[in-house]
Image (cartoon, rainbow, N blue to C red):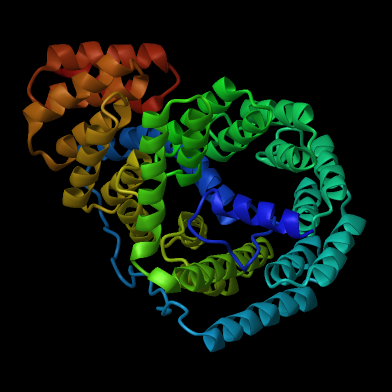
Length: 490
C-alpha cells in the first residue's frame, strides 16, 4: 500500500506542482475542468446560433433603417452584483466552507427528496473531504435510482484507485465505458491502473483508446511514455514524452522522463538539458509561495470545488423553475471561482430567460475579460450591444471578432449593418459587406451588401445583391420588400 500511495501521489503531481489533500470527484454535472470544455463547446454552438440569429436580426432590424423605431430600451439595473469572497487563508476558514457546503448539500436533499443529483452532490462533497465510506454510500444510492449513470461509475473508480484497490477501480471504469464508450479520460485511468499492476501491454492499448477520444491529453502521453520506459522501449517512451511537452510545455515530469530516457540511451548532453529544464520548472512552481504553496493550492482547489457544489445546486433550482434561488447560488459559485465561465454562462441563461438583456451583456463582457481571445464571446457582446443600441460598444466588439477570426463572415456583416444603421462610415460598410459575401455567399450577407450599396447611392449593385438574396431565400418577405423598393427606384 505504501508503494502505491507514492505512485498515486506522483500521478497527482503530473499536472501540478504539489499534491492535493482535497479530492476532485466526478460530478452529477460536469466538473469545472470538463464544464469549461463544454462551456467552450456551448459557445461554439452559440456562435452558430448567434450567426443565424444575427442574420435574421439584420433583416428585421436593419429594415427599420427606413422606419425609425418608436421606443428604446431602458438601461436600468444592468450591473450584476457578484458577492466578493476573500481567498481562504486559515484552517478555520477551510472548516467553515466545508460546513457551508455540507449544509447546502443537506438542504438540497431535503428540498429534492429522492433526486439522484442531490445525492450525487452530497457524495461528491464527502468524497472531497475524505470520507469515502459516506461518499460510496451516496454514489450507490444514485445507482439504485439510475443505474445508467456512467459518471457515477467513473468517480467510484477514482475512489477505489485512491484506496489502492486497482482491480475494483478498473471494474467500475469498465462499467462506465459500457454505458458511455466515449467518456473522456476513463481509458487513461484504466491504463494507469494496469500500468501500476504491471500489465503494461493492456495499459498501452487503453492509452491508445483514450487518444481516440481525447487526442491531445498531455497526461495520457506522459503515462504512455512511463509505460514504454518500464518496458525499456526508449524510442517510444521518448516520442510520447515529447508529445506531452509539445501539448503542455510546462509539463515538468515529462522533462524528467526525457532526461531518464536520454541517460539510458547514452545521450548525456540531452539528458543534462532536460534535467535542467525539469529543475527550472519545479523551482518556478515553488518560488512564489515557497513552503506555503501546497497549503495554498489546497485552499484554492477547495474554493473551486466548493464553487462546483453551488453551481450544481443552482442548476437544480433553475431546472425546478426557481430562478431567483438559482441566481443566488450561481452568484455564490462565481464568488468562489471568479474566472469560471460555466457559472457565468448559467447566470446569463437565467437573465436571458428573465428578459434582462443588459445583464446578459454584462455577463458576456465579463467572460470576454476572462477569455480575451474568445472571438465567439466578443461576437455575442457585439450582437447584444447592437440590439441595445450601444453602437460604440458593438463596433468595438465586432472589430475584435474580425481581428481574432478574420475568416468568419458574420462580424463583417454585422459591422457593415451597424454602419448602415447609424449612417456613418458608409464606404466602409460596403467594403465590409463585400468581404462578408466573399467569405460566405449567404442570403443575409447579400441583404446587408444591398443595404450598404443603396446607402452609398449605388442602386444598380443594390438591386443585383438583393436579387441574389431573394434567389437564395425566396420565401423571405423582408428581402422581397426591399427588392420591390429598389426596383421602384430603378
